[in-house]
Amino acid sequence: MNELPKDEALSTPSRGPAAPDEPAKLPFSIQSFGEWLRIRFSENQRFVILCLIAGALCGLAAVGIHLSIHWLFEAVWHAAHQFESFGLPWWTVMPWFPALAGLIVGIVVHRWAPGAVGSGIPQTKAAYYNEFGRIPLSAAWWRFLLTSIYVGGGNSLGREGPTVHMCASIASWLGRAAGLAKARSQAMVPVGVAAGIAAAFNAPISAILFVFEEILDDFSTKALSGIVIAVVVAEAIARSLLGEDPILQAHLGGKYGVHWWMLVAIPLGVSAALTGHLFVGSLLRFRLWCAERLHVPEPLKPALGGLLLGGIATGAFFLTGIFGEPQSSVFSIGYESLEAAFESRLVIGAIAVLLVAKFIAVVVCYGSKGSGGLFSPTLYLGGMLGAIWGLLVLKATGALGLEIYHNDGELVGACVLLGMGAMFASVIRCPFTSLFIIFEMTGNYSLILPLMTGNILSYSLAGWMRKVPVYNAILVQDRVTLRKMPTYQGARDYRHLPVSTIMHYDLFTVAASESPAQALERLRREPSRMRRSYPVVRGEVDSRRGFSGIVMHHELEEHESDDSGTIGDLVADRRTLTITPDTSIRDAAMRMVKADIRQLPVVSATDPDRLLGILTLNDIARQQNAMLDHLGRE
Image 1 (cartoon, rainbow, N blue to C red):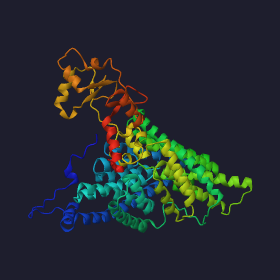
Image 2: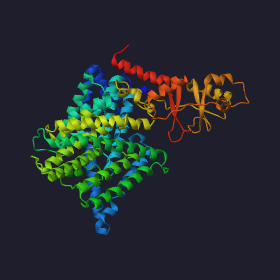
Image 3: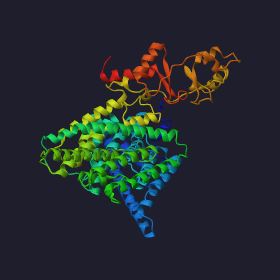
Image 4: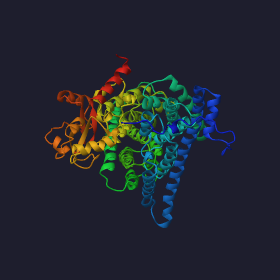
């Protein structure tokens, strides 16, 4: 069960004035600034001021991580080629840079910054809903440093997700340090998220939509005002420092009316949904395998991932035939390759190699606990998939003698954009963001009809094939329940979601070898551990291995005086029903009703003796009540 932060002093600083004769150690501090704000302004006015400050700081942070990754990768690329003067081909040296970056990140994450792994968006969502938005400022510093090293060192992930986490941390810290109430401090998190996305993508409208689709999941005009303020400030800073152009130089000159070739949006949407489904499934499975089956020291896992990435990316150079050029690179973010595909400078064979190589590379880097996001890789995969369909359309029209009134390059470029939008909708599951982010990248609304068709088709098919979106699935894999998140409280049919989204992961088990008296004595010393029932395991207390059954608390009390018997004897002849994390909530509820029980143990699908958690009837009832409240029903 997720608990509120215990140290409330961190989220609500003391408001008592300093002693008049106490000398100030610093001429200015955020605490003194917060005191000044509390004296001079109301709560609403302070919130607006902090949104302005958050927008400025987040804009600078987003620009900083963008430039640091760019400069570091340029330095790594140049350094690898310098080894040729020593008789070493650059491609024998380049794979070691991602491995070195992975080793550095692995050591730091393992020892000092466990929250800096992955993209940062799942951590942001968990903190927003389960911890009143409390994200320590140290998360921003570590995220900036480690993502810069990892992605700048050549590993194949993106910067946008870490930018979100970093900016959410900055905004959260501002709210707490300035003494905002908990609800207001929590509201600073989406402000930082929107500012980070706006500055990272140079796409302010998409940033606002992403916050409501991924973080808030509902519309609130009160939230909108602060978000817009921060987005405007962050975007102004990013444009003044990086220029007006979006991150991807994808400008189309033509005006597209309705034309037959736009039907490519249908197969493109279907293929994007299938590719996205395979991508998310592969990423989750490899991530779980690295966590549970890869028996090497934790700091070495990102290093091994980086070394494997180096081999994959170097192999892609040989296979594409564009040897050593950035436009055929799988290293780092890879927007150069995406721009080359957009401008129709790559042949279909090279595009297919880059698509497959990038797919595997991202799965390896993310699954091995690297520090980087999924936005850029998703757009990369979608763009390459769209380029393949565009080239296939050109070949088909040439073979059939059909006429296209746009030039070949623009048609391929248009398909690249359609693929990017469809893949974003399939993987990230934010359909409106996927539409507007393409508009803001191109400044061209002529593709609105095929873009809407492909995106909604991809989004719908992806949701049908996988009920839980990727960021929430990562949280579930990390044993963070999603009961408080609005995605699982709204009008959607929650009954078809897996029980892993609402089950309890925090368990107190008793050993089968214990006597009832021993177990009760231990539990009475810690009253917070007492429950109506306890899972029984054959190993040590509080282990999750060797699950044997469930014993009720009243049974322990009834047999407390029986010194000769053990808890294992009490459950030895019982047949205990179990479910797996992928069992739907509806099926689990039906099993409870049929067996007239109030809870079901959740065990591993591959190892039935390994206990993962407990699903109770209260968990299901809580979800049903939340849905009814959302709909306004009695």
